[in-house]
Length: 459
Image (cartoon, rainbow, N blue to C red; front, side, top):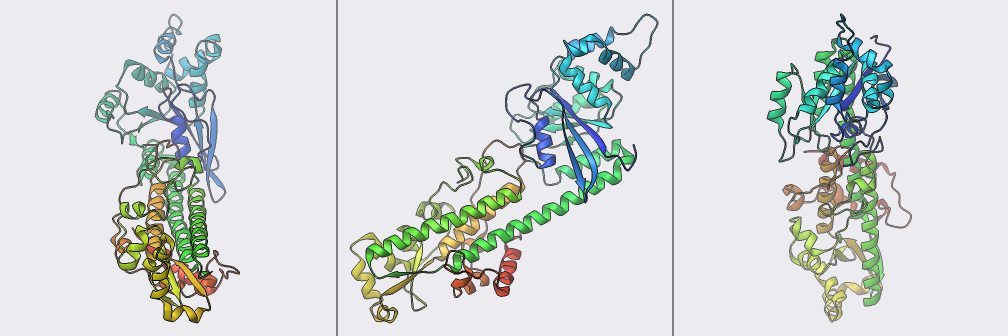
């Protein structure tokens, strides 16, 4: 193996243990191969290449599942002619030249042929499965190729995993180096551990593997920073949003409804951008637990139950506004009258109270009121998007289950003072894409987005 040639790595194992899932996670390509619970999904060898700065470093090959290793091992043992003592690779080579490799053991032949042409193999194990004889025979067949094998324990985060049993069984077979890598929820340092373990088996490949490690970690930092900036831009957009509405109950209701729709749509654009940043598709985030359906929040953003569940604390008029689902402040001449007044106007029977509350100021606006999104909704937006960012960072590209969001523990966003960039944005409606004729490229706005992104990127 030379530095000019990328390392060739063959992913092998029984059917339906997560081989394609591992490839999807390592390549960050949710479209690689096919992942399902049906056995024998992969029927041929598929390849993918990992490069850094245009230099190919690693070729990965997904192979069909081994289906009848017990019978194949018995067949290999009968291939020796009288007086012969074939080693493993020679025995496998003879098998591949025979008719059985094209008929009865066609799937296994594809695997062995690819492994013989690779530098090493990753043997993927479903750690939830008991250690059966067929798996020991699979390892015996694969070991006959004479290539280094690194066992990869998949699905180790589930309650039914048998990691200790597998560790003991692999040790008895002389395989003491292994790596835990759950393809659904890979550990933060999972790829580092995998490549470092490979470097122990393939010393000459250590420089290339180290470059992959370094590049992976740089990309992880860049994705988190990029995600934080997307969220910061969303929050500034919404904080700066301001709508004028005539002092007519029906027009007010329509204006508030339109504001709700526009803010929901703006949040959706942020969700889609985060999914794209982490190379996920809208369907990858579809679940009942996560308030997304095909990438959309299924909860009503302004639903008071959503605010309550996320622990957003509001007080006074804001609490009344959230409880009635208004989620907006009524601003008159730059002075907040309080969402409670607006809620009264919209709930019916309270319009006179709202008008009385601001009677001395309403005339200054010549019949116009201004609506903005209140602090409680800004807090909710920040909490939801930060949770999504964290969930995507910890999600494997083979995951099919729902992303589970827990109650946020970020007290600064639930209870503390809103960051200064958002307070400043209140006075700059030109900074919001939700307003007419926005000026989004202003240096001051970009500086505030950067400052807010720095706060959001903190753990």
